[in-house]
Amino acid sequence: MKMAFLFVLGMMLLTVGLTGCKYFKPVDGPGMERDSADIAAMDSVAMKAREDIAGLIKELYAVAAQNASDIDQRFACHAWRDTVAAVEKKDADLSEIGFFNDDYWTMMQDSNPSDLEARDIKFEELDVEKGTALVDYTLYSSVQTIHQKLRFCREDGAWRVHDIIRFYNDSDGKETTFSFMESMQNYLAEPQEETSELTYANMDGIYDTLDENMSSVSRISLNADGTATWCMVGSLNYTEYTYRIEGNTICMKAKGVDSEEECYEYDPDTRVLKNEQGAVYYRQVAE
Image (cartoon, rainbow, N blue to C red; front, side, top):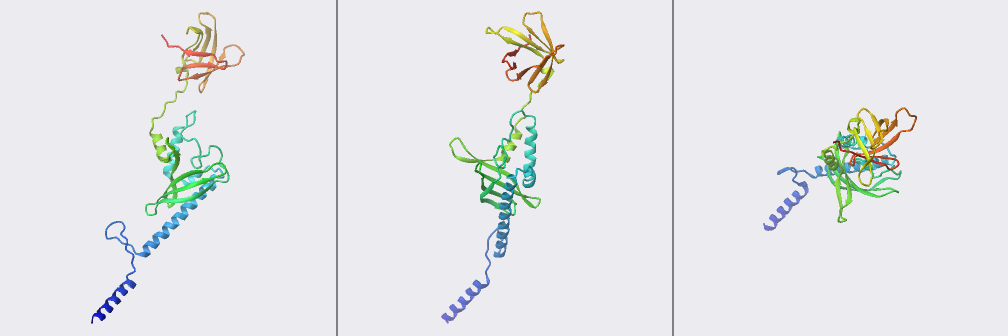
């Protein structure tokens, strides 16, 4: 009787083993389960996403190798493009280099080499349901080799670059990263530096050369109506000019005389005029 019971029990366990082939995995909360078919489907979708993203990275740098100008439009998301446009607008009137100092896709300051190639592509994060991914890769070329990451989002039914993560060595020589998107946003949040555009009104004043005793020797007077005079201090004789402003350059032309312009560079920080011969005229405080 005991042997019969063990036989029946064994058959029941075998039947459960053959028919109960579900793989239970809790997801999205208690009581939610997916069978092996669901897991296989998810793995297939994830594999397809990896293939699409890896292919996109390779295509991006194939286009960059041709020095194409539409990389952002073809490969980046709306948020990236809008942020770049805002930074470029902020820097539009700068005379010096603004936020962007190189091609942010390749870190090249000149034209891109034709042999750009993304290698060693590794997925650090991938969430197909949320439509996000973080990919580490190395960009090889005959000019330089750089290490970067790209953060992706799924937008308008396609994978798009949302952020570039760059590597750099900190003060201790340790390799660390920074987000290009975050850096742009912080830059945009900074107060806009006021540009001191030169005008006839704000250049109106007296500018003197000084001797070793800090006494005035010669004088340029710039007037708000676009006229000017030059004289030796203490002399009754003077020369009349008209002048024009080009950036930070003041160019004076003598009235009634067929002569070349005399140009002076103005430094708004020190408030001095300096000509090509090195003569320096210091702006005088009005009494």
